[in-house]
Image 1 (cartoon, rainbow, N blue to C red):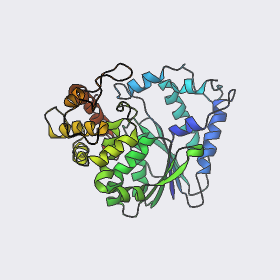
Image 2: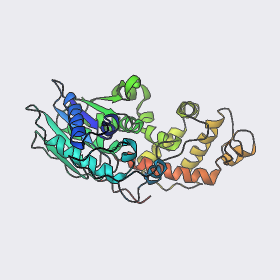
Image 3: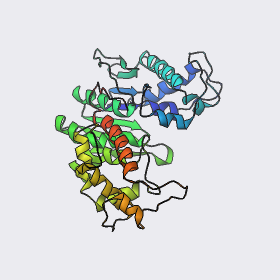
Image 4: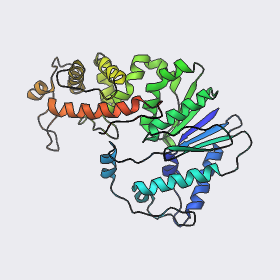
Length: 344
């Protein structure tokens, strides 16, 4: 088994004790990586986020607020407010680089391989195999690059550890592509934490969903609300999932976007019209209407929501769709080392 790990969750789950030095915290994280090495586990990958200018995630980070800048060094004491420390991108860049360097400099048992991202580069120990630089911003997509590298190196069973729903969605979206190249791939996700922790078998999930729905899932997730896109007022994932079941034709629009990353969507294009109809169905599965403007005139969509904001019209929905398409375009290319993502 090769264990893979999205490192960002280590920094959140392995919260240091106030007064500890960063070097002590590093040892805690190092021990968490050692615990991942079972007798049959030969590899652990630790994958961190990067922080780029002109990023679609910038608005999400602004909503979280600004943190206090602290220098990361071995003998420096960790700040008392850890979540506040993690809100500063520069803090996290330094922390991730510090942890990666310490992890790969640790002595592991013979035959055990460790790969850790450090900016665009990858540092490693226990192997002569190297991984080329990667321009991905998010660990969410970059973990798939490491997963594919593990499969290419002869792995058959992989475990991805994450607390992020986006990672799960991306893996489901790329499963059939990976399975076509590596038929023996057996992909698992160790998801969540505490009482909500569970193991998810990607192979089984995708077998149940089928190829078309699995491949379309990242676009569905982006369109109906994720970290970088807004959700529909009063409608959670369960509601929009049921709407997808009631209007399966929208799967064609989702998969068109999958096949044409960063496609130019207009009000008149067929794909937008299907997404508009899907939006109506989200609010009323029995409505025959195809336009959100028409729906706002009736009782399907209230003209104003509880907070005084207007319900989406065609113009607003188009802008929402463009943002969702941009995010889905990033998720479409997780196996490509150089995404060369256009400016938002």
